[in-house]
Image: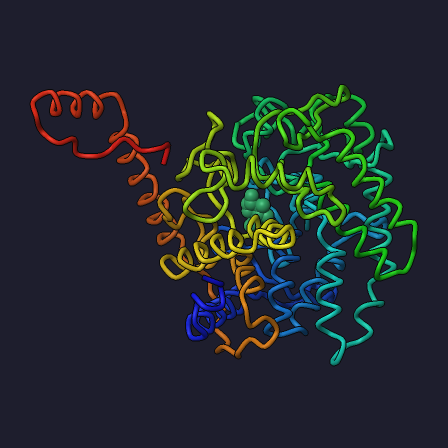
Length: 479
Ligand code: GLC
């Protein structure tokens, strides 16, 4: 059954209204002491109260359906948060500087209250700009051109500072620069300095001492990654910038990156793309959704796309889960479907993954599978609201609530730009006790699940079945 036939207009309308309420409640605006104005959507208060680079791009992509001026303001604010040399930070602390307590966890230049971090995030801005510009044709046609100088500077900065070996693939120097902070694909590279380990503190400190000079860091240390997802998004954005500017320099750079992904990251034997780590470009053979991200590239050869889809994305033991698309292949020993203390991207499904992969699946002729995945996302949101991520096996909603980029779902549903209006919500601030309570509940249910699967429970089940009693819980996958 097609998506339009199985999800009636009222349900879509409710999803739109809730998405609009979520973004509106998370909207923050004001001005700095020097008069610089800002307006952005924070991902989810109280946990995420600031402006995050790729979150803002996703938010603007959704805002353009409801309120194009806000979409534009979100992206303008992101540009305003950047430096004159083209660097744009991963996180910007508009209304409250990062104090010394946060410094170890935020990659800032100093521990004395910076306005922003000194590292990057997956560079989606040009692509988001193009989409928002297309939605601004009537009420602000100049938007398409007003940011071009700054966008050029930004992508030139990435080209100059993050591709020291000139192979077309840009490098990340901290795991969270991809936005996939704790992904198991970084465990082997960053080890004790992984994002979720105390050693991350040293990774930040070490970058601080070298003033975040990426050339110096890459030359001196081996912990840096040519990341597949980052480079796919970089290439897509360079194509967008080439279309916006009409400048072939960006087209050539995009093609160079695309070719490099194919020549250097593709593993013909395993049928997946791998990140390349360190000076030796050693492939990190952990299957995560990032290995499938090249599906979104416009000229990916068809046989490669088919292998990614049939051998992985639609493989029941790998990524074909009941709910959305897991962030790690279910076959990987590191896969965890549920809540994981202070760690994300180690299994749960996120909506931005579906946003990138489902249209590609449809383009390759797998429309029914794309619809199945979208239907499962609709079910997730109807059951739990726009959560940060979801358990791909049992559909449980996890982590932050009213999470901004999960509203990307509405960008994938029929009705598109003709979205009905929704009531504008009053600012939503969340509550710290509520957040702690939710984390506690998630931890408790995860502990219960682990106990039910653990050695004692297995022993009890074994005893019961030997005595003729029915086991209480069937053996489950690592849910
Ligand atoms: C988490 C995610 C990252 C996101 C941030 C704000 O750290 O891993 O991708 O940008 O939250 O939502």
